[in-house]
Picture 1 (cartoon, rainbow, N blue to C red):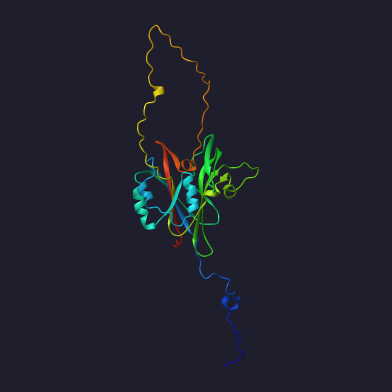
Picture 2: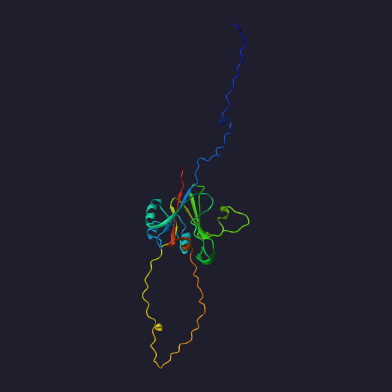
Length: 285
């Protein structure tokens, strides 16, 4: 029998966990809740009719929009309003028939996103624009395109705010290349027509309904234009000389912003466009 000394195995202490040695963050380091950015769905409907559908506009109300801004939209031949989400199906049915539609989806942020861009403007287009005080100024749109700038963002109080501004986009030529965010405001932004809306109602933009045509009574005959009695054969009628200009001056009537912005070209000719903006404030998968 042999005796000896057995080697002692040192006892190892377990390593501490990270949660035990990590410093404790302050109470206000992490938000209590995370709100995802809102998501915007934009639907541009091409209508198969020359006039805005009155049945659809009856479902649209001015709730949540500034009355003064709506008055300026009306003065520039445009209309805006809000729609209850449960009335969307009836609103779509009132728009029928349609020629087509375009959809786009984007996440909300602090940046404006271009939506519903028209075709290129050819030549110089005269525009009559009514401002804040009701005054009408005449400007010219030299090329470029018309579109809507839309910003959807969440405010500090948790609500979703929508900003919409008509925009004449004409890209500037610069020696240095620029990103799309840097060129988004090139041209003219019509700030006097900027709409702001907060809430869960849908935003509807388009052309106002035309007023009903009134039939004019038949005009009474003008004695000055009535047929003159024929002269006797032996009597010579001498008409006074009339000095006519060689060239008639061309009168160009400025158009309004609404027909330019909410009209697009189709194979059958120009058609009307209605824009419907829907916000999804909570879209967690």
